[in-house]
Length: 373
Image (cartoon, rainbow, N blue to C red; front, side):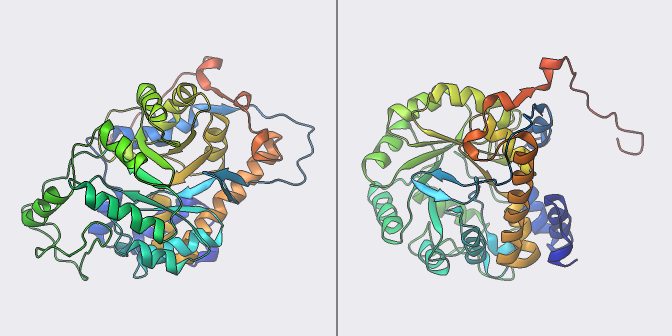
């Protein structure tokens, strides 16, 4: 299947599943519990209906948006995800190049297999943001912040919904390459990735149970704006703004952490009201089409982030695959804007979208046949 034949994000998902080794596909597709939250992220978008306005001049559409003071050509950016080396030999270097080609941002994960300096050098014109862990030693945190600033990263993202490291399996897997995390360890631990000893090295370095005091300390010790990722509570959003956080990132970790939490698109309006314009609000989870992007923007998101779809593009064809995933979403968004009567992002207003319950439309799940159950 060539790049030119892929016309939807679903096509890239299918291609990635065909290309990736089973254990890689399983890792990228992992969900918590029964997968309720992951599935609801996808289904929830369908429960919102668009109310287009017609007879407007939409002959020219502008999809650009400003995020954290930087102009992006599209309101779709790359979410932090781990171990891109599983998907492609060029790993995060290729993902960054794909994002830069579309003039959009990428949040580099601390679980990147390439250093933040290497990624910045690979895409010198790109918009680079860094997702950083909390560490037990604040001197270590300070060094990480300084590294990001020196390398040209323009924001710090803190993920707050992943307080626990999973326990290793009984038999750690052998990988065809050495799994390294140069944005976490200054010196590689002497134990193989996936072993109990490796996990212990992480526990000694990384702070599992961070608090608001840790967030305040990070905000006070960097010149960069700080974004909190993993917010689902309006109260947490208010507390974050009170502590100087500049961005609230609505996320349930792609359904990989706590099963049974709400879909992010359902939570989004509550977070937007709680923030009350005092910080930018972003969203990830379940974004698969341009109309999904349009709905999220209408409900108050400044920008949406994609995780798995970017990995699918990377697996299919490296940097070009990532770029085409973003191109597809951009084209779909532009077309949806035209049909909804929006020539620019500021035209996308809350009145554009309503929940299906406003029309008395029930939420009905398909009943599986005997072969599907």
